[in-house]
Structure formats: structure tokens, C-alpha cells
Picture 1 (cartoon, helix red, strand yellow):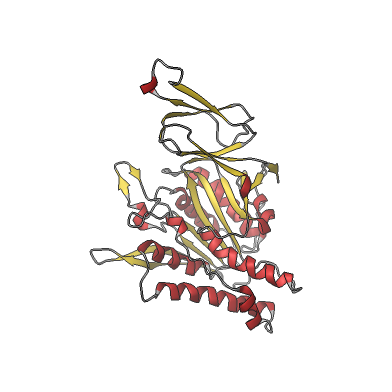
Picture 2 (tube, one colour):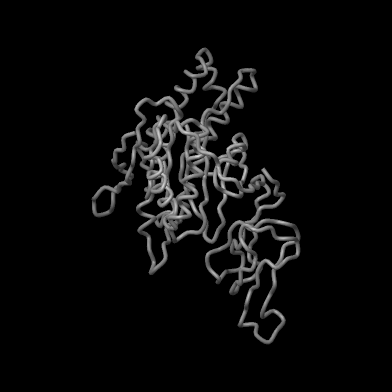
Length: 368
């Protein structure tokens, strides 16, 4: 295995210098397995993925690589450096206000028309041409005569690299969060390989994120081919790994997640050696059953529900303190939910506006 470091230009600063991200390329002596693309820190405060990439690179030194791996830590230098005091504000592009992870290109491929023009090819040849079309679509977007926003340029530049891989992992964290995995429904069995206790099974719908931008076109093509009687499994896998809370790194915890990624790569044959997944209980729900709870009033929140632990209906979720209402019954308002759930993440701050997305919870949870 050889490791080379390079950089990718994703834009230019107002003062002129290029804006670049580092790239580490790990090459197999003879690539016979799927290729891999892993990125981290698309949101500025979500730094734990960099620690996971570091630990993964350390681990890979002891294994035989059968597929090429591209690693892109520090994927959003603008967001990472978007600081206000001791806090990192790099979740949204400060120029457009758009979430950095909603800037990827929706190819909107007419798979019926595309397939009809390529139906005489073998499945392998179809996959090669389809991949070339997706990569070229990114390049065409970046060279649009009207230009693109800085955030979109960054995202599509990263996406063009991801489209060239067979396996794509996008490493994120929540605000205050337990670990969870976004996994396409067609790849549900893979959730038992990562060292992550909760999985959200997501449908074939593009919402702007990296994983969806990668797997949705392939899923649509495969669905069409199967519908007309030509057997085809989705040849590309893409996941978003949420690795805990933002604004911190924990190397020991990162090692656990790196070993989980290694177990998945072992299962896919990317490394020659067998790596067993961690023995742990794992649970899932469908994305439609992942619910947002919004603050019914403004105030100061005492978050009571423990993240990653089942919460029975009617149990305390949080308290909202309103000192401006001292002396009335509304000074402290207890909050609860009317159905069983598992709280997965909550808002980072204790002060909230009315309508703030306070919690995200999994409902209709089942063991996998």
C-alpha cells in the first residue's frame, strides 16, 4: 500500500489565493476490490470525522489493501474557519445561507431515456458509462457560463471525486448527539457492520446531501432495469455516519468507529484480512419515523432525556424555564411526548426561540 498526499482546489478567496482541501490517496498494489471515498468535516464544527480518518489511516498500515481509498479530511476550510469567539459557525454558507451539506448536484437523470440509448451494452459497460456521465455532469456544472456559488463549487468538486468511487462514506456529527447511521434501504444489511447503535433507513429521494447525490442516480437506474426484467443490483454504496456531538475530538472513540469502518471494508473485500464487526445491539427506524420536536415556547431548556436511550411515552423530555413569568404557573414548563421514542440529538444551546428544533427522535424502532 502506498500513500500520497495532494490537494484539490475548491475555490478562490477574495484576496486571490486558492482555497484547497487535502487529499490522501491509498493505492493497492493490484486493485481488485471496490474503490472507496471518505470525507469529513463538511460542517465546520463537526471535527470528529478527522480523528476517525486519522485512526483509520493508522489501522490500514497493518492491512493488505485490495481496493483504492481516497480520504478527504478538513473538507470545508471556509466552514472550519468560520469562528465567532470560541464557537464554530460553519454549518451554513455565510454568503448564501445554504446548509453546506445541501449544496450537492441533483443530476435529475432521465434513466429511461439514458438506458434506451445504452441498452445493448453489458451491465459492466452500462455502469462504466453511467459513472462517466455523472462525473461529466459535475464538470459541466462547475464550468457553467453563468458561474456557481462558492458553496456549490466546493460541494460539486467533492461530489465529482465521490462519483468515481464504489463506496462513499461522509463523516458528520450532530449538535448534541448519539452515534447514528444514515443508510439507504437497499443496503440495510450493512448497518450491522459499523460500530453504530442506531440506523436511519432512507428512501430513494434526493434531499441535497452527499450520500443521496451519490446513490440516488444508481438506485433509480437499478430500479428501472429490474422493472423491465434485467436483473441489476445497485452497484454503489453511500452512507452518512454521525459520530456523536460537534466541537470536540476523542481519539479513543474515533478508534472504535475506525474499526467499524474497517469491518465494513473487510466485508466488501477492500482489505484482504477479515475484520469482525463489534458485538453490540443495533436498532433502526425508517426515515419517515424520524421525528422533529420543536420548542412550543421560547425560554431556557433543561434537556432531560438521555440521548440514545429509549424514552417511554409521557416520560420527561425537557423543562423550559421562563424567569420573566416568575410567580406564575408558567415559570417552569415540563415537556413530554405522547409516544415511545429514542432521542437521537438535541439543540446545542440551552436558550431557544419558540419553534426551535429541540430534539430529533426515532419512533417505530426495531432491532436489526
